[in-house]
Length: 610
Image 1: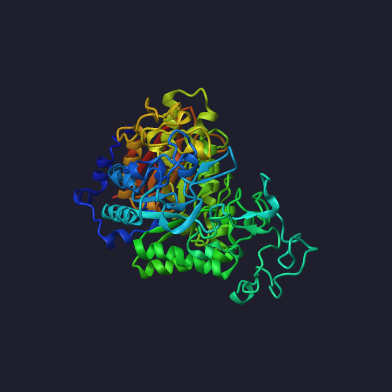
Image 2: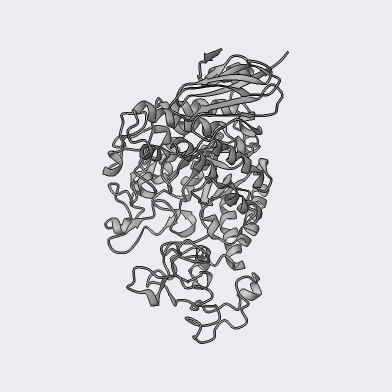
């Protein structure tokens, strides 16, 4: 027998923990900081695109046109006006979604505008840093950041900063490349540290033993940075970076642009961004000082590390432990560090090497995103999810580490899942579009890992692709290419603000968040695959031990109904429906009948035999 259970989150929580539901939340510092990383639900937001609480800082205190101030709310590549005050004012909206941690794009002072003539854009995203010690003036002040952190903490919401160590803003230019659109990468073999401008150049940097000897004594002998190109600083920008040591070209690789392949993946400039010499102890120590200061001053709760795979592993082996130690000294025992190791494939091994070799505590789970994307766009069967879970043993710490990996459906770089689904199924009805997006969120909120919601997904944002095309405004937008998008689950457009708690995706996420909070097994229970196959269809797994109280999750990734028996734990005899269509009882010891509509789902709590 299958019964459609009411899925209101409050009723679900009441069914299993009525006393707890009656208690007021405990947002004391000790309680909040005692939560492990897997206990969180993360909301990732670009402050510039979220809410404008103070229009007086829209131009960052600068004067002139958009090429001076970086502000043009009608252009997708410039500042739009969102800021820390706006983010603080919208904490009610974020909290009601069920979020327990906010990760935001970098807020450090950026170079306002970069790019070749005709190709300029602004640092609204935060990744072109000039001053690592303060908040960008477009977003507010350090005091306003402190007010935001304090307001979030008062609600039991942790704060994760997005940090960068791979590069700074594009300030250094190379004399040999003036007037050229691209400065090609020059390798260490063709342009070694010991000759000026190539193998036949004059001898320089005598006694330097190479960048693999990472001692202060060795790097003190690296005094001339012109081994590949001749670095120059523009007039008026010689001291633009803070801390001041960042202005010295000796602390950069100075080898030209990366192709994101081979040696230049770690040594090359990202589209001209100044690539730091992270092998140097001075650079390592400098960044430990920079980011420890943000922990000391503001009591933040974690770091997402940008471009982690483009930095040498030895850097992370020193940096990550130093941050964890500083956080513990500040009374933050569960400081969460997760690196961005971007990858388009469902390949846990590629990600896991950065937890083993690089010693990063966790990484963003690009493999999870690839699995959900490929299953829901019809490229793969549900066995892809089985491969994802099988790969958990590869991470340093195995399954325990896999629990802490932030999982996500899309982001500001790769684009939104809604757009990916629309490309795969351009003729899909509105009902189907919403059903697929709901299914994706059910998977993310019930699978192992830390669910990470990309801002706007809860309002059905789709975007038009990746990068700038996936960074819409939550407040009323003036960008034409955003405002013509067809949102999922709503007749609204981005031309008006989108903070609707009645949106079906917002309501579903809030419901699932309450269920996840009420059931520890969804946060730290082991995953047991119960059914999967080589085509779209049924995926079933349980969370928790085989003690009769496991939680069964079943989803149908196909456009046809499914009906079949699924293995469960022997002691699981009856079920309480938490979300979707759940059976009321087992068919026999160790077996339950699952019946799901197209794109249907069931989240069911087992109860044991008496």
